Image (cartoon, rainbow, N blue to C red; front, side):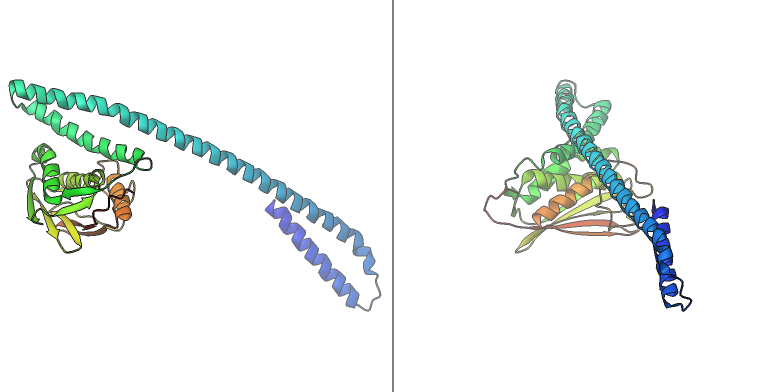
Length: 293
């Protein structure tokens, strides 16, 4: 179709040049002899424009159908994800309950500890997916949280996972148990994703250090360790981003963290080199107005 349009365009231009030349020529030749050619090219141009219009309408209709189909697929995907997340909760709860029951009756066992560690990894993924499927439907009211105690509880929760990788945690609390006005669900997603990433990428037999700071207007959560260097810190928070050699996980955790931080005005600082990798989050302390966003 583009070729036909170009032919029509150049033919019209050529006819105009010939007519103009003959009009200036003193030979006296009547330029009216070119009129049939002009009429023919005129109708050819009309046909071309009509064809272009029809082609554009067909394209727009096809694009509309594809958009509607994509929206249906996306809606179906969201429904499936919500259903899958909902159905995952029950077996996870059953596994954890039975592990605890067995340990109460028979004591610790290495096989059950491995199962428990794997279950806690799945639990973290479940919590991320659960938040992603509900974040646009639920409100997230804020409350006063003892920041240091909260972080310690989350480290304790993943302690068995860290021990499997021979990784230890050192928490340096400089907050004097100051409180942070924040939503507990969102705070857990930030802390958990950073803890599990530290466990996943820190070299074996190394220590993960967490430092908690308290300033007049903010509280800082800093976590660092000797771990796999991040090649591109500008893209590490992008959804599904993968660097060479990093194949574990869904690639959604840090994207989720970034979105929460954007909503809550949390500053993020990342630095990574051959010596250590550091993530630092600056939380505004907020106030006692229990707003939900």
